[in-house]
Image (cartoon, rainbow, N blue to C red; front, side, top):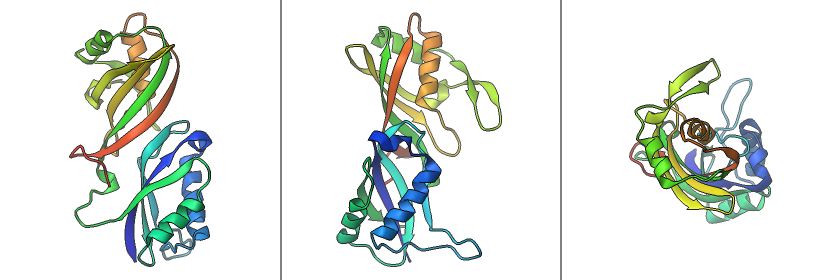
Length: 219
């Protein structure tokens, strides 16, 4: 039994595949590629496969992580076979054997995003003033309840990265993981509430990095 971590991209139409469907899809990919996953014991055995920080439907990414256990050591040929069996929009970027010093997926603390926004004009000063507020209170909905929350402590970085013909490109580093998880669309909602004359018409979210407590990628 050998433990591996994979980094994969999700783009195009694959962004509409849900988290649960993605787990089932990966199980089939490994089977078709002839890569033997380790299964749990009991009446309902399942593949030992875990995805870190599930991606919201409709969001693309170049940095998703998945931990698996296999029955044998994997080779470059296995890695290539897995990618040949992946559907359009999904691609394994790299894999590495999980070693003792490697951070666990539960240790994920931050996620970085590049958000392309169709909006009314927005300046760097407007973004700076937003980040320098004492608090940013918005309604945040979880599985259990909806409540007013100050999201400012969960914004590690927010900056205007570029300007497009009909809007802007924002770079965000937000809290993510088991203890805190802030989504980019809620940041946009807050910005539209607190930045005068800023109106969001449409947006596209792309995740560019998933980081541990040390600020480094997980693989």
